Image (cartoon, rainbow, N blue to C red):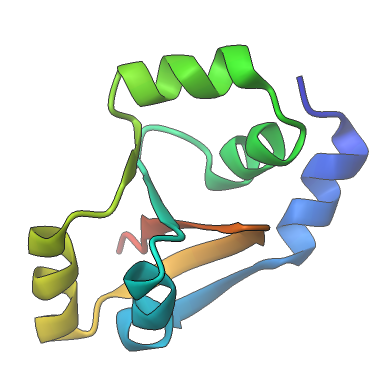
Length: 98
């Protein structure tokens, strides 16, 4: 489980970016999509802390997944605004909700 310091650090690395700024990371296979039901920062902290048990659960439930070509094309069309946080080598994203 990630510690509070790790979560605080992830908050500081979170930003809103347009999909066009993230597309190159998608092309490299480095983007993971986080379901809106989850807290992006907490997921990033768990990935960073290598919390295999929790990350596996999210993957199994498809709450954390690779971005597929259809999603990328849709987001490219409207240059979707995303929340993004980097936890090398991954960029975790979540759609900015109104």
